[in-house]
Image (cartoon, rainbow, N blue to C red; front, side):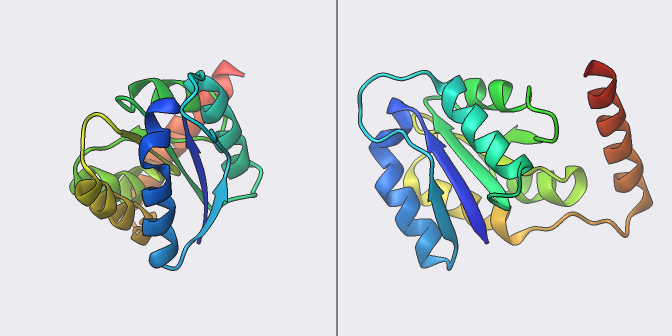
Length: 150
């Protein structure tokens, strides 16, 4: 799977490890920055990753800021992005299976690398359960709300 990865300065501290985890699992990483510990603004990276997913440059996206909250808020402003902040494996796979989540947001200051590795695996190995009518119906409602806003 092709994964767009975007981090701010707080996420940069673990970026090399994230790339290694993703590549070791057989994924292709599209590194969208940042490239140093110099302070940057998380919305810039949320936008780049979100657009990469929506435009088909990547299959899914991963964003890392200090808490994961800001990245999630910013990414969800992009039509077609369904970003979720997850710090447990159940949410990481269930968000994809039930809600078609396409961007995972993580907090580098919240969970350690061993948990992040588990979250990435859960997120990237899951797929939307389009056979379940209630999930399809709910996703259609989410998309309708999104269309109302544009």
